[in-house]
Image (cartoon, rainbow, N blue to C red; front, side):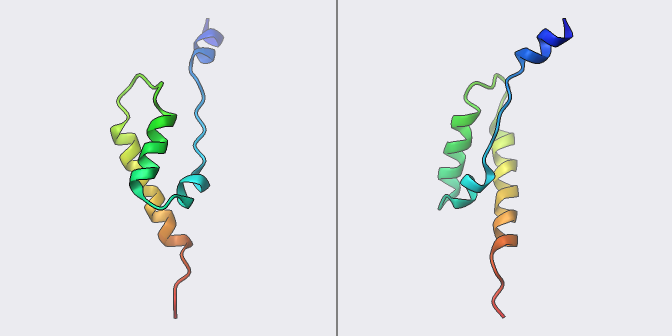
Length: 66
């Protein structure tokens, strides 16, 4: 029965590079919401925290001018 339970949980892959290439948080949020549309639990907090982390990654990947 345990194997059946594990199979019932769908896997979700989110391409962070794709999100980083998007020009705005609105577009990123829309894309993530498309990906989690089949999730039965509330997703707003997840999407918000993911976008916060992506903003942090953008700051790290942007070359600093000297």
